[in-house]
Length: 94
Image 1 (cartoon, rainbow, N blue to C red):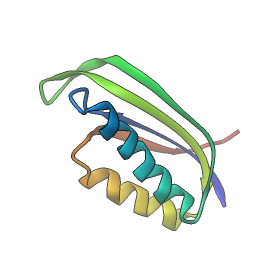
Image 2: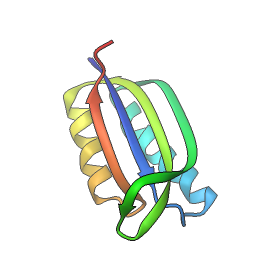
Image 3: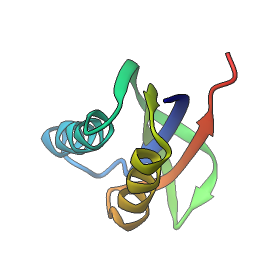
Image 4: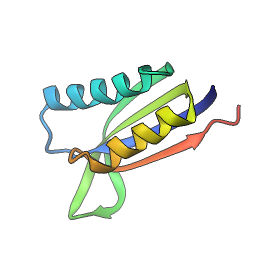
């Protein structure tokens, strides 16, 4: 198992309950073969540049350990999720 970090940005017009449901959905995918070490919902912030006419987003940062198969499944779900504007998964070196 390797250490990873994922940050994803949720659209700002999503209801608070839907934000929590989205976070729980991705948390469940990670825990289906991995372990979350730290999770922070950083809240609504201004984007560095406009993405699809959206200027703000709700940032979520998750540190976890998992197998490459879990990471591939997480990336697949992040790509097709309508709530997510952008995401980035990186290997944690530390």
